[in-house]
Length: 105
Image 1 (spheres, rainbow, N blue to C red):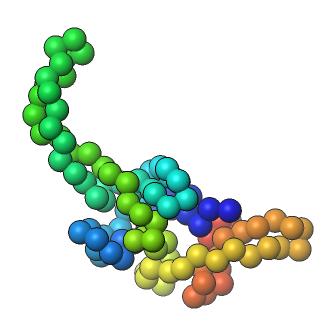
Image 2: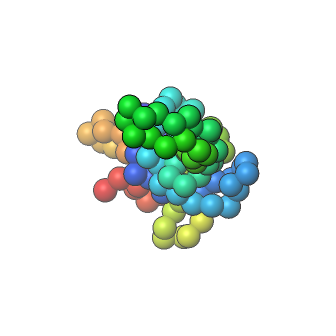
Image 3: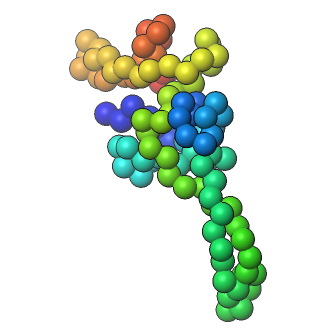
């Protein structure tokens, strides 16, 4: 079970965007994720008249390692670790480690 899911609000704990929060837009591997507005990189784009694309410098979101982000707990307003709890019906749910509350309701 992945610790992070698409749509989770996360907090950046390391890197150039340390201290910022964002929403997970895509999970690439277990260890690489795309976060909206985080880890932006400038890419040089050549003009392409076939698809009416202008040239220039554009900003693109780059993947960030999942070890550099933590899930953001809205109740405590702090970053938190994720735990996995198996219920009696053998279903696994994600929980906040500090409070023990379920993340997915």
